[in-house]
Image (cartoon, rainbow, N blue to C red; front, side):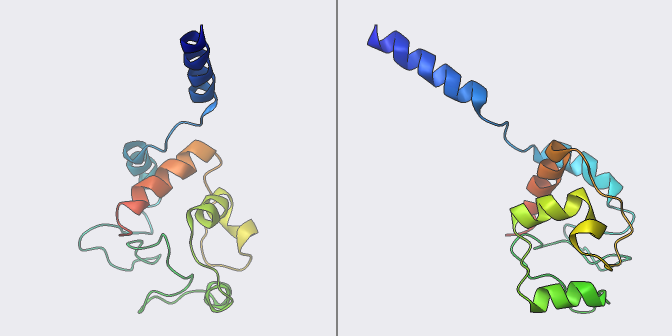
Length: 125
């Protein structure tokens, strides 16, 4: 009887667990970002800054990119692009950081945002 109870408990716990982020789907979703951002080997600043190393990086800190004053000030005030901050920012960049240059409306689907962050983490080591 105890074994059945443990199996049942394990099933309940796993059923309630959120699905792990999917970097492969994140790569597909990232296509929406490619018009302005590059990531990976050979990535350069474009309309937006390169995104290698974004997870854990202070806002407004890539040399050679002309950030908005809002983005530079956020970095000076201590904003670091953690997974949680990116999750919030990518939902609605203008609401998160008013007066930033990013014209993208955001990714409304939370799973898509998590997947994109998982994809970007591959380039943030």
